Image 1 (cartoon, helix red, strand yellow):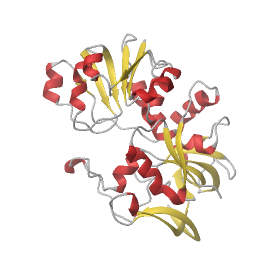
Image 2 (cartoon, rainbow, N blue to C red):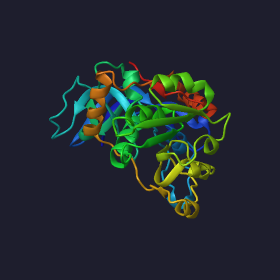
Image 3 (cartoon, helix red, strand yellow):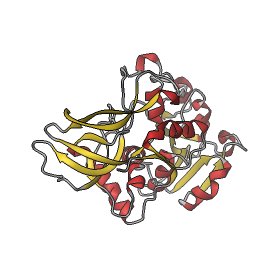
Image 4 (cartoon, rainbow, N blue to C red):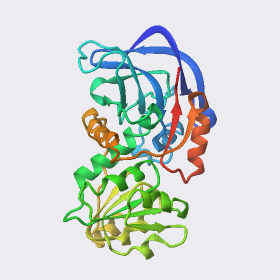
Amino acid sequence: MGQSTATMHAVRLHAFGGPEVLVHEEVPRPAPGPGEVLIRVHAAGFNPLDLHVRDGFSAIPAELRPVWTPPLTPGTDVSGVVAEVGEGVTAWRPGDEVFGLIRFPGKGAGYAEYTVAPAEHLAAKPAALSHDEAAAVPLAALTAHQFLRRLGPRRGGTVLVNGAAGGVGHFTVQLARSAGADRVLAVASGRHEEFLRGLGVDRFIDYTRTPVAEAVHAEADVLIDAVGGPEAHRLLPVVRPGGRIVPVYFGDYRREEAARLGVTVEEGWQVRSSGADLAELAVLLDEGRLQVHLDSIHPLAEAAAAHRRAEQGHVRGKIVLTVRP
């Protein structure tokens, strides 16, 4: 990635901390290197990862914690228009509308008016979606798509999605059926029941009223856990012997207890940037077979407000930063 003499606005952090460390400022505009594309960003998607970046990955065990040094520009999901292409790029031309998960699991720098991406990380923006909607798709939908494709339920089976109303969750409940699931169970707070039933879940569990392990006992062939955390082991009883848990985020699943119950925890897998996979999802989005729901939209300069909204919890779908000219 190079750097031009032009400038742009971006949101950066110069120290780790709360939402107040996010600063909207003028910075040098990047220039595409060989194999890269410069994108004029129209919208950037927020992901829970951005909270971890902002606070220095403090919730992740020290031995697993990435070492990133400020100043940093958060953001991995963008939708926009190709402004310039680097040497060797033939798939894209200036003016093309694209979206993508950029450089994941590395540094994407999407909270900006312009960003640079490897050409192969991009797909054509679905015509049916606005840039705001398209920016909400990449990381969350690719996580669901790649995990389900690789770990899809055996013999049909039952998929339980914990955190089903959030970004990864609401894509997972929609994609699970095409991945081979006979039944899709959704766990979220009661306020999301109508929303999730509208996405086609077979059974809804309101965790605020009933402990999930009491409502579902040894029924799930696959548990996609989009919550994780220190209490993740409480979900072990919902998985049948021989079943699998797929953590989206770090969680304490008490491996010895899981082994005793005959449950495999599929840790160590990670979603990857892939324009080819995103193009498959774009077809579903254009055909209306996959829907994206926006929780809220915030101007780029108000990225701190987007982070505060995420920290309030009970997010339905995705939070987006709009970055229009």
